[in-house]
Image (cartoon, rainbow, N blue to C red; front, side):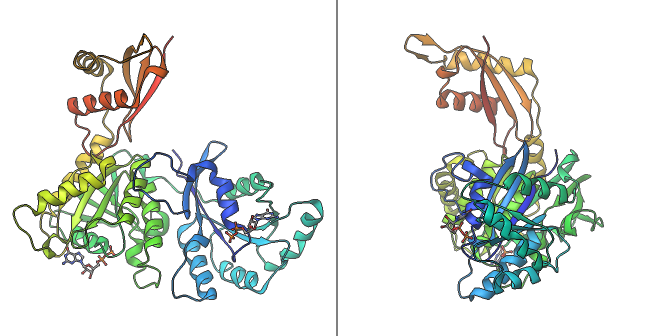
Length: 437
Ligand code: GDP
Ligand code: GDP
């Protein structure tokens, strides 16, 4: 499958960035799945256009405390240039070309990534006639838009897809295990990257330059090939915005998109924070394999119960990640770090696991014996058979007599039975119900 196109919208305040962002991603930005405690930032969302998937970043949502207006915009443009495949510079036809627009355009002219100039608030024909003035920004043809009326977006997105460089998707290679460390600033992601690369049996291969921005690191371990995704955060160390939470969330989402396995890093010293849940929620929704890594375990005053207590807290606060294995490590002392590559390998394999229909239906028959399908208003649910339709994440279809009778709790019961029969540790399972007349 082709990788999703990532768009970033840049422009000064009030030109309509969030309006356009919401238009592109539609309803999807509001909770896809109701995970308690998972708050969302409206800075990054996944959308779809004519069957093609795209990610949109509203750089206007990335605010940096203590930075003045000009440096805000400067950083936003810089992030767009780093993170996006195509950049949309947004302006406002009613204000015409402003000094700030000129400054933003000047920054964006430096990138070799495609930039599309869009002129928003062109609500009527007269205003659409005014867009020609915007040629002077030196960014090519201006595209008229009306965020409020939803006009012009089709042409804009069509252009964006045309201009995007076609990057190979690493996940097309089924044998390559792609993973990333995701988490808030300072939890120890870069330290973990370095610690892993320092492991004895990890052999780094020199494939730099073969992927996007050459930010990925390839290595082999036990004859398996791994790609550690998106280590750019490490290369870019020192940027002022690098340690801000919103930037970290955005980076995490980019890395999640590109990985099979997301290794969620928590900081043992600080415990679980809101932002950890936001990041975890995205990985879960994206259907990735997930490992929870509690880092800085060396820094904690421990007794015999510490690990048990921390585990309980994780299970309680990340109830939706009940399938994710937990590993307590230290990037500093390397404690238990040796176990990580094997664990990544295992959950990656589980994420790709296929189960034969015949075996699956034995499990179904057993399940129905333990817990007969429920009835509703005199009608009884019948589950005729189960079949696995895809992997990554494993997705099952249950064929039933009447969809209305299939409740969430019974779906949940069936997926738990599947989990008991086969090793799906570390991967979410998707269950779809279809009617068979
Ligand atoms: P941002 O600061 O760039 O994210 O801008 P917003 O999306 O918050 O929009 C700023 C204001 O412009 C809001 O009051 C919007 O309702 C308004 N707006 C956005 N798009 C359009 C448009 O196409 N036409 C008109 N007339 N107003 C718009
Ligand atoms: P990142 O922002 O998530 O990439 O975090 P860094 O790798 O930059 O680490 C942030 C800080 O935590 C640095 O000062 C590290 O030295 C420290 N650190 C990272 N891992 C550990 C660990 O396992 N134990 C202790 N005690 N400190 C750590």
